[in-house]
Amino acid sequence: MVSTVLKEVDVKVEFDLPSTSTAEKFDNRRLTAHVFVGRDERIQINDMLVTLSEVKEKMEIVRSRVSGVVVMLRVDKNVSMDLVNKVQIELRKAKCLRVNYISTQKSN
Image 1 (spheres, rainbow, N blue to C red):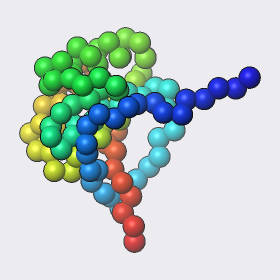
Image 2 (image 1 turned 135 degrees about the vertical axis):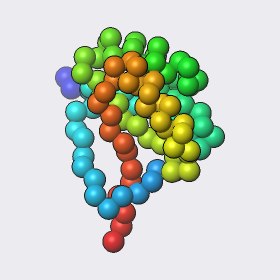
Image 3 (image 1 turned 90 degrees about the vertical axis):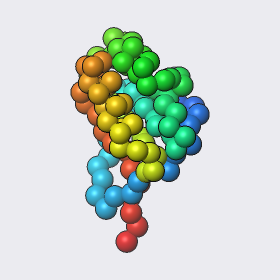
Image 4 (image 1 turned 180 degrees about the horizontal axis):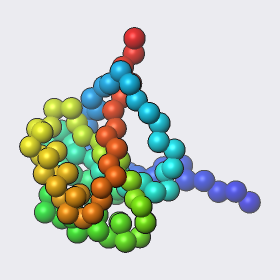
């Protein structure tokens, strides 16, 4: 018998990803944690809405469960870089140093 996960995360924040002309695909989904920063500046880690001050604590819990976790960071293109930097600092404090920034592919 084979089983699969159809939906990993229930997204609770609204975001519009920036686009890029080059992108790489990341395949190992079992080692990932999803962090969303929505256009209303709400932060979601996997299925949990959190405040900026809770990011470190929640990511430490995720890291303790999944060794070598890779953070998939999805940020609305209009969110201030100041908030993105603060999230990055909290991730660094939680020792989550592998971060991928998710974007959409530009069409030619």
